[in-house]
Amino acid sequence: MNVRERLATAARWLTPGRRGLLLLAAVLLLAAALQPRMALLRPVHSFLFVVDISMSMHTRDMRIDGEPVSRAVAVQRSLTDAIRALPCGTRAGIGLFAGYQTTVLYLPVEVCSHFNELAETIGGISPQSIWASDSEIAKGIYNAISFLDGAEGRTQLVFITDGHEAPPVSPRFRAQFQGTPGEVPGWLVGVGSLALSPIPKIDERGRQVGVWQEQEVAQTDLFSAGRRGSGEAEQMVQDETTVDAGLASRLQLQPGKEHLTQLRETYLKLLAEELQMDYVRLGDGTSLARRLMAGPASEWRWVPTRISQGLAALALVCLVFAYWRGDRSPLAWAVHWLTWPWRSWRQWRTTARARVRARAMRR
Image 1 (cartoon, helix red, strand yellow):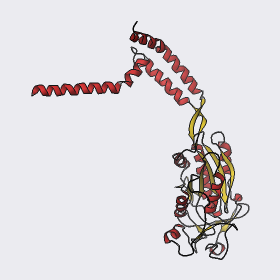
Image 2 (tube, helix red, strand yellow; image 1 turned 45 degrees about the vertical axis):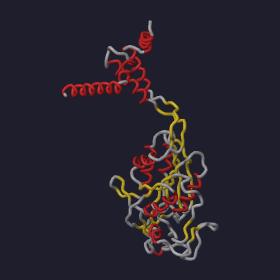
Image 3 (cartoon, helix red, strand yellow; image 1 turned 120 degrees about the vertical axis):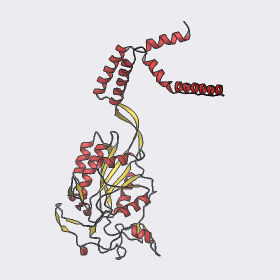
């Protein structure tokens, strides 16, 4: 028996017949129905979602299903849907921002096994959670970054805010970021309408008791009024000479209208550029999850992964091999299709040579 005959005999022994393929397909489909999991090494995303809960976030200039809702309610809906849309293995944490500080409620945990806890936490965000009346956005972002700088893995910051600084930020004296831009990757997510709206005044019980008036809100920055910032040892970016006109316009200061609020998108884009982050406007949760997952992965982890689709695909292959052609084994069919490009090229070359010879004979 020569080598070719031995290989043919081995192929017949190693490849099952039609009955064996049907039995194997049934076993694979049964296993797929049980939805088994297997630990696979996969790129994993990790996010810390920080939600601005300052009073301007309770302005009713958003819509859900055609009904007007507050920015906070829109964030709750979108964020819950986003976490639901994130694939299993993704990690998510929740934090709140008010004043100039960020408080982390949940460090990043796996979204599928902890979805109920994450959704309950997001649903519990309310006006009663506010612990400061100011809203110093830039300092809050810097404070949130400090939680992630040097942490295990590369958790990305997702800071959701309308960008309304209260009191207004000074063009000459701005809070200085002490870290390295880009060290912590992340997103600034803008929420709210671009049109000006009054800011609701919320009491300690979370009830709206009117709106803020012009005389009740600081219309200029603290340094112009001769006061310091929120921290005694706070370092500022100082420019004693002139202020760049382009920078001043990007801060979106509106003296006389600071008691009104809008999505200050230009200012948030400025902060995103300075911190080497990305900016996106809040939409539906599925779109937000898609944008976040399109970014670079935080790390590689062994993740329990459902393999039902792979088992079902193998069952389909078995069925195709069982019923497509009875005179060829699965191994023969695999070789047939794998060598199809080479055989097609040979046929094309033979046809081309025949045409050349025919032309030469006519001459």
